[in-house]
Amino acid sequence: MLKDGTTVFSYGDHTEIDGQLTFMLPFDDSEAPKVEAVSVHASAVDLSATTLAAESAKPSFESLDKNSDGKVSLNEAAENDALFVAFKSLDTNKDGVLSREEFAAYMKDKPSA
Image (cartoon, rainbow, N blue to C red; front, side, top):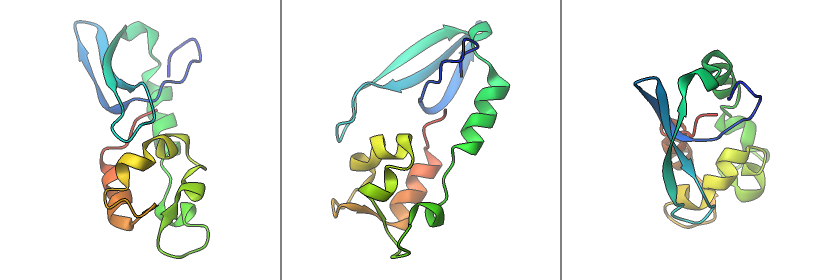
């Protein structure tokens, strides 16, 4: 989260080098989204708010699986913007739903807020 209140969704963790934070931003919602490295001055980022936002944004499989069928559909994933954007690439077997294993892979490499 930037200090001006802007929220940015990135993939993975950021890296800090010489006072610059670098992170990967997705630029489309295709199956293999284009990502680019973006750097901002560390003083522009509210790291404590970023950490809090990232933790509060983590959905559980159970909270998303509204019909308790053991899968997360695209409609169910729409509750979480980052998951919805990443859905196509996470659905590795292309069956139109996320299994617990596919969801676990998302949580492991979850985009940070």
